[in-house]
Amino acid sequence: MNHATEPSPPTPLPLAGSARPGTLYGVGVGPGDPELLTLKAARILQSVPVVAYPATPQGSAQARDIAAEWLIGKREIPIVMPCMLDRGPVNKGYDEAAVVIAEELTAGRDVAILCEGDPLFYGSFSYLLHRLGDRFPCVVIPGVNSVSTAAAAAATPLITGEQRLTVIPATAGDEAVRQALLGNDSVAILKPGRHRPRLLELLRETGRAQEALYIEQASRPAERVIRCIEDIPATPGPYFALFLVVRNGYRQDGGD
Image (tube, rainbow, N blue to C red):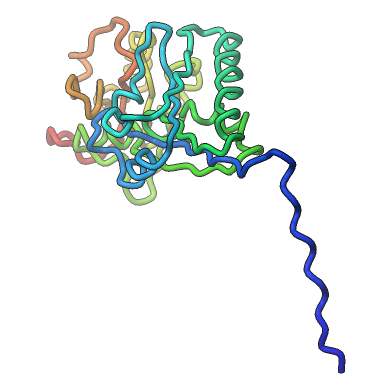
């Protein structure tokens, strides 16, 4: 009996002049407190030679500030993001950053892209993953997101049992926010900013005002938790804030 096996397919030869590509890491650095950076994120940041992160035209970079102690000696690539609603210049910024990052990866150098919170939860990393994820090895390191952090700051459970939670950005239209408030047990409304006055009106209109908490700068030195809606100014507020609306949940202030 012939026990010969089928020959294995030949191993593909590398392209001439090419090196093994580097790995693209999407690293969640958490909501602001450097102590909420995970052990795995810290290990990856120690190991990679190159880091990239979103930055404003003025040079401010929140994600970099959070992870600063792990970035000594790294090559840094700021991804300059204009602060505007027009997606054209923003997409151009991601396109340009993807070219620079691809050059590093092609040369065999690992690159970590820093992202506040979690990379895939309203994270800027998603846009670079779309541009680079099918060309290079990719690993995502999850981070602590803003919703969990805000609930912790308020010492309030988001949901229990079979309750439902909806997360919605403040930029959603009035009807979308109204339906979220009317149709769910708990609602997180992210980044109220200039939309804060109309969100306060919608909370009152839907009868959810007494169940609302407002948290600014969760886990950061300027953290503030407001438990009474009447204490929230009906004026534009900071970007790093959110409303948590929890139906019949335990509240640290003893409310029902």
